[in-house]
Length: 276
Image (cartoon, rainbow, N blue to C red):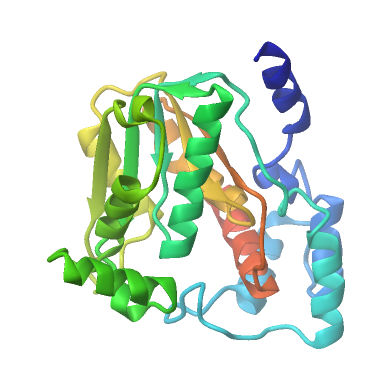
């Protein structure tokens, strides 16, 4: 086990927003700006302004909605550099033990991938004292594919078809070691925002802070998946490190993600760095 963990720590050095901004723009970010014909990369303020204007996903659209901000040559060139970057690679933990693991809510298929990744880590010998399952009251019936299927499954079982109920159901139904099931699990739900929009990560993190008790100096391992690790890590750190929590975010490698979702993740990473 010691040999495995040493390898993990050596391989996974830069996976947060340092992937795109490390005391200035990284070569990866410069390449992204060049391919997308976007200016202002050298200063964080202008990089945020220009990328937010050109790449950010419209508020009314979710990750599964199809939209395009790239032409074919741009998409091909961007795909080529992204698939070899840290935005696409698997990230593994750098510690052997954590005070808590936090599974971040998402669309049904992505949430299942995150739970499966947590199980993988447990089988590798990574340990923790508690599991938090984060999710919102987003209606799965507004989603597509596996969200729609899960909504029907939950409805057939008399369960509200919401994101948090899906995460809880996935946790209960997925096969895992019994010793993992013995670890305390606590769901954390965030409702709609005052403007009627669904909750975002910062809303669920605010709820987590309300119920987690004294977490000063605790080590929390967040489970996501790429290409979203960079900005989810930045946002979790921005919210939780004010309370003295040590945040680390890990997850599975990027699968078939639209390049627009990658660009949106890069924008949000830059925004969180600016707000830090």
